[in-house]
Image (cartoon, rainbow, N blue to C red):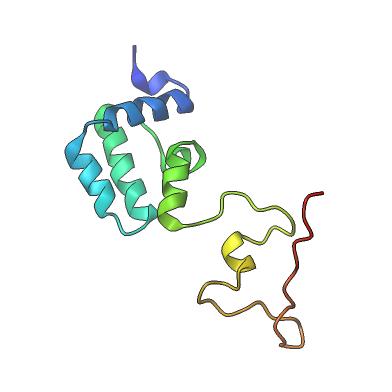
Length: 114
């Protein structure tokens, strides 16, 4: 069967299985500084396997999407006002959010689920 004719989730699973035990590729992934570098390594691995996965496919399909998120430390999902977690916590080194008057926005408090 032609691997390029498979649906995207099955192509990603085939790529994940091929990465299991692929020492050089795993070392290259470990050396990547960020998610963009990981995507380049994974697209290259996909091309060598004949899977034909694009950057968009890799960014949208788990578990690769989650690996890239972990490398970039980006929030997959936030609850509430659509502000990623790193911005909710004061930005972790980023400038705090400001109101129209230039003052820092007040922190929102979590009141609990029940």
